[in-house]
Length: 391
Image (tube, rainbow, N blue to C red; front, top):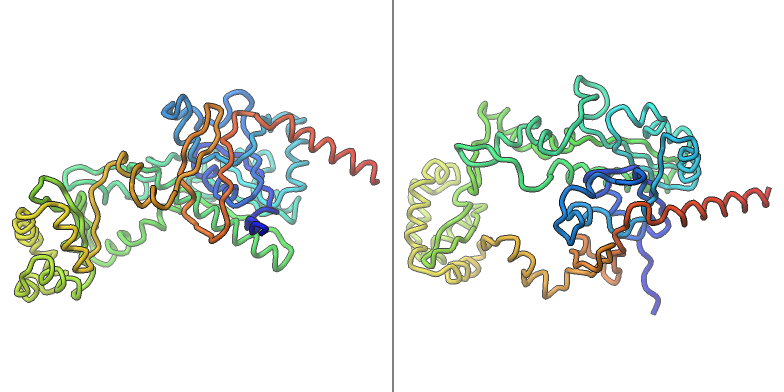
């Protein structure tokens, strides 16, 4: 039986990329069959290769965002390098760049200029703050954008604002870039026209900040920092159990609140306690409510509490660390790892989040700097000769 074709098997992507946002977008395309040619600086390559040495000398962040790609070491400021890039773009479907502010425009590599030259192209500019406005020429990194968008002001404990432990501005930007690319490919399939668009870290994280922004505008005060608790829903967060462990659960509506009181706590009268009959009242009286719940939970182990929550159909979770995630039964039993080759040997990596029945994502090797330079240049030379003889 013939395997189903990968959804993006006929798509070629050229990406001048570094760090996380652009490489993450192109890697998601590569996962589903797109050919991704990653252009890197000769020598050191993408500076994300040096972020850490956690994976047998390789950067964990680079390995995460760069599997299944071909690496072309190219000086795009050199005339020969520019000719090579032009030849690649003439046959590409998608172009992505996240060069420093203004650099792409100066070299004619911004999305709008490229689509004018190559009308079939879906071209994406990724920047820190977008075009126009007083911050358009300002360099941006993930944590700095978390600061500028107000994310730190709502994250952390009451005493201490905290950054997110993940590069959420980069991740959000990469996923919006992916979204725009897929929209562009769909538009081209209907109209034959390419598309130029831009995504910025600031705009991407601003979208993610919509709820606290609208809450603040509506209430005239910000969402409070609440540590591991939910800022506006109660009970929702961590609770200690009798064996010294911590479980999390959340109540989303009044039906769940009644089920929690009756089935988990065994106290139906609590559901109609005047202090707790709505979420707003539970939030206003949260300290007393949480003390009462913790007192009840002290009689049970964490496993008993989780079993009671499951019986009541109350969403819950364990407070795992990252080591526990790596061995999580939901990953292991569903075989959500694949072995991926790197220049330091094979390493297990998570499958992409999208699952398509009967279709296996690519999960190809993570390239060394310039690993495919000779083969790509030879391919372009052969194509040039072929076109010359045909003429």
